[in-house]
Length: 342
Image (cartoon, rainbow, N blue to C red):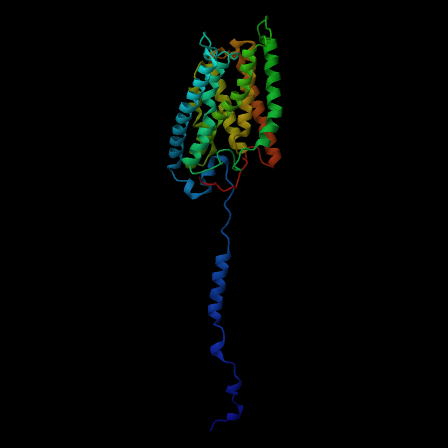
């Protein structure tokens, strides 16, 4: 018979039925650890690739819908605002509708300024709404932060606007007509100055949103390299300013520089400021010498001054942004802001 004295006391053994299942515990820990694990954050994107921040805004058809929505909004704004403006001018009197008889816009005529810059000013809201309704994104057309960076624009304007004004005045004094005189400060001239100060920046912003921001983000939805987003819109921009060859060269250089700034700085702000500074200087000079605008033509000798000025300003702004953000010269400001959908 077996020796039962050395067998363990079964009454004192633990109740194994009530012990927890260690396999189930391990599985539960795996489930909890997996469920609490956050997905890896998406890498910050350059400006032209912001549509890829969210899968629903990166569909191939989004750029087409954005352009279509922008065109529809722009036509609607033209009809609405144009109708209101014409009605107000008719009520104010026929003098408000009198355009320059020469066919060349006169910067001293408020009606000429309104006709030239008014439609361009409507491009910015059209693009913003088109990106929201067609592209499904709100705010990212301004910059990688999802908003217009007013502080950045103000700091740049404090330097560029006076710089271009002084440079243009110096060129006008040196190369202008010998009988250069200041215009008489009349009520129509004051009105034209006020209209220029309001509409010129708005028109420059409209062109930057329509000719730089919209094409860059549309092409960036399909193409990864920023080169295409900057260069492919160039024929459209030049054809819109098609005059003589020297003016086309000047416009092309400016377009490439401004497109590069939009990509480099991660937004439209510096491009808007640089465009506004040059346009305000040109309109200001035209108030002294209307022929300076030349109906869209440009003296080839002017390229000697305008092209280096554009290049130097672009290099200076690029250096400033690179130094501020600790970036390499050809490294863009990126953003990881989610794309709010409309």
